[in-house]
Structures are given as structure tokens and as C-alpha cells.
Image (cartoon, rainbow, N blue to C red; front, side, top):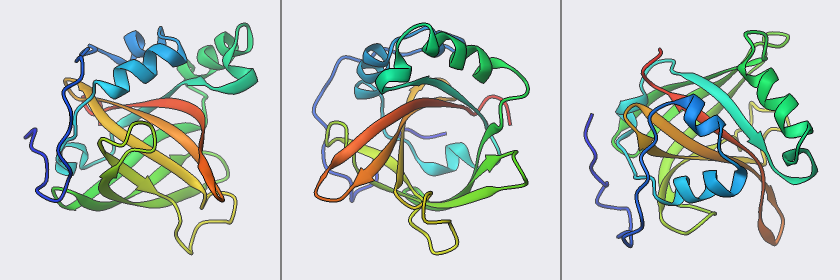
Length: 181
């Protein structure tokens, strides 16, 4: 697993790096703390995620991002019955690929394309997961996921909703654990 930045990606300003050891450590953080960890994360080659790594919803933003709703949702996300199991990835090169969002609910799976581009959070390079594909239902297409590596085999991302003529709205934070495939 290499930690290179594809040549097409813009240079990234130095930021404090806070490496996290596992998904449980991420799940214990607030949305503001997750934002700080994400901003300190690094770009990665997509082949690091090839396969079907495990995913976990960490916390939601907005009104549901406050206690006790946040704690209830986090407990549900830890449970084995949570309908989202992660994402499957297949890279085509260091900065591009495809994947599928594994939702175990009526057999639904939502494909995405991956590419390196500036983050909607801070403008630094990230891996974007783009659901704006014709095969996805209209309500899935405006989802904008991003990822950065924040620890060994651990990736953090914001899930956002793109809105016309405005910045994307943060909906939730999620993690991908590539040590469990």
C-alpha cells in the first residue's frame, strides 16, 4: 500500500496529523473532532481499498448529531443488524476506479465512480465517491462521499448532499476499515 499523491492532484498544505488506530476510536469522536481528523488525513492510492472492506457509520450531522439521538444512532451502527455493511472497490489506476455501496436492505446496492479531486470540506486532495450515475435512483445521485486515510488500513469520510448553487451539506461521517475485508 503506497502513500503517493497522483501527479494530477494539487499540492497539499501541511496540516496537523492525528492518526487513529481503529473504528471504535473514530466512533468515540464528535463531528467537530472527526472534521479535524479528516483534515489531517492523507490521500492514498485506490488499490489500497480494492476488495470489500467493512464500513461503519460514525455519527450524523445536524439535529440528529446531538445527544441522545447521536448515541442511539451510533449504537445502532455498531450492531450487526445495521443495513450498511461498507463499500466494495475496484481501482483502475492510482486515482480512479469504481465501486458499490453495500446496503443490505431489499438487495439494494448503489454503484459509484472514484477519482482524486479537491475536497468539498477543505479543498485538499481526497478520493471522491461519485454516485451521480444513471443506474442510481434520483435520490442517490446527489450524494458526495469523500475519503482520506487516517490510520493503518483506516479511512474516514464525510457523506454530503450536493445542492444547486451551494456548498454540499454534511449529512454524516463514516469509516472504512480495510483490515477487515
